[in-house]
Length: 339
Image 1 (tube, rainbow, N blue to C red):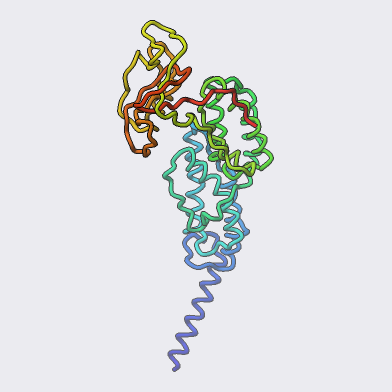
Image 2: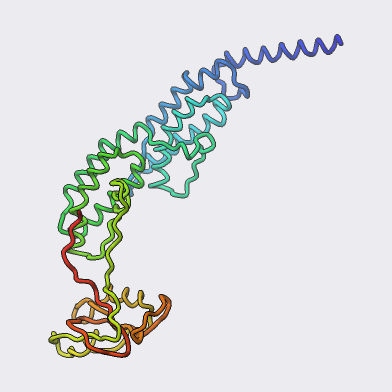
């Protein structure tokens, strides 16, 4: 009994000494337990302030041409936070301090993931749960300040009559919304950018590409509280047991009764969708686009996987009877304006 009491007394003395040691040693990195002083250092004191300063100063990389030094600095800040949680302040960081550090980490990690390596694993996720991912204060200021202003100027200076720069600007805007400043743009600012992009989209559709799909349509549609309007159908309905004729020929070799590319013939055995897709991208040797197809379906409504002979046509002014198949004409290309 005496020895047991002595042993317990000795153990209590050692634990007390250890606690005092943990509370007074300046460098706690190798101390396995969390004493009062270490907890203070890691949550409100010098350790916390230093870690916070590293994250605040770290660059948030963005853009297709990322500086290697900025990337290294950003990755270094994340590595420092991992060390902070796993070693320097292991088991000592309380929820409030953890949340503040994680909020500063999130945009740094997001920048690397979006612009440098989309296979990068968030190694701090154990301490910073993904569902709590937030836009840090610094990045929020950038996305509603300098980066927002730059994007606004970019859209303002983009031609509104099509051209190469127009789709490039819309791709940049989509990247701004979904990558660079994901979850960081205030509603009013995002709406202003969406409004600025409308004449650019209209210019592309009316001058370059009638079938252009705006990459920002989904984001801007959801922002307005409405789903994006689906693109209108490219082709009218089946004109069963008909074929195309034209009122006059345009070049030697053209036929009024068979305005098919290069004077006649089929381009292959295709599904209806594939036949229409070929019409969308083909031009004949005179540079004329395809305006209709003739599909040898016997005038019947066939399944989507059925394949039949496909002909593409440069003209189709009126129809006449033909028992072999059906005509599908492209819908009239009226000028389109976004609401």
